[in-house]
Image (tube, rainbow, N blue to C red; front, side, top):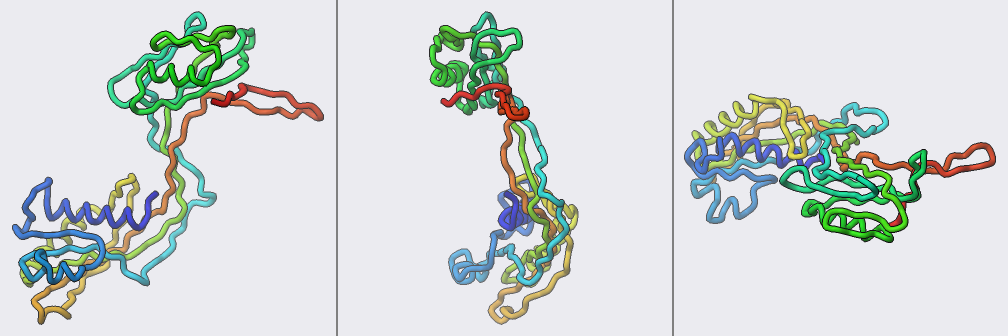
Amino acid sequence: MSGIGAIYDALVARCGAIIYPDGATTSVTGRNTIIKRGWLLSTDMLGPDSVKKNNDYITISLEKGHFEELPSPIGEQWSVGLMTLPTIMASVSAGVLTVSSVAEGVASGVIGVEIGQSRGNGASDAFYAYEVQPSDTPVDVIAALAAQIQGSVVSDASLRVDGADIISVRLSGSADMRRILRRQRQRFCVTVWTDRMDVRDALSDILDVGLSKDQWLQTGDGISALMIYRGAVDGDGMQAQSVFRRDLSYDIAFETVESQTGRQMIGFGGVLQEGSSARVQGETFASP
């Protein structure tokens, strides 16, 4: 779920990439620069890595009193994002189900099997499904299905059923599902803390340019947030203690998003009401 925490983390990552470009171990100023969420702690002011001992800090904080609700979609409808195909293959031949892998890597997908007596309309008596686990092999998948199906006879990665037919096998992948719960604008402050005035100017200028190059902030869950610069101000209250501060303020418009993983449908079933009578339609889903 995207929210305040995701914006914090994205700002910390963005500032880190600016101050330590290309994964460098030395900052652009050549000084030790610490980037963190929240305000400075007492140890940051007085400890071994304090501002007063040639360490610079960049903090990310949320300013109170700057919340604005923005229009959001009506109905909170779900939308489909990136789809993932199953990474196994399965086939049925002469009533025997065989599972095989298609590629190296993590196993995934859902496999469904129709079991019953062969009929002209292809209807089945029961439908079994199993969600493939990342560490599964074809043998593991067959074993998991056999544990559900009475009369199963297993041979390596193949399965048949005594007294019944395997009518068909179906495979499905998954997709990222998201819905927007709320849109809002919040003000965040990127603050430079240092014991030198010239370093404050250098660090804040570098941050200002780096954050202004792209107004879109990318969060770790794939959501884009819009950054709008709202000015800078110096905090001179601690200059007598040789601590120099500058705040860069940004209004960030973002969405609070609920995310789930959705599976593609591989079977259906239900009761069709026809006047005073009802009849079962589709598969009967068997309990594991």
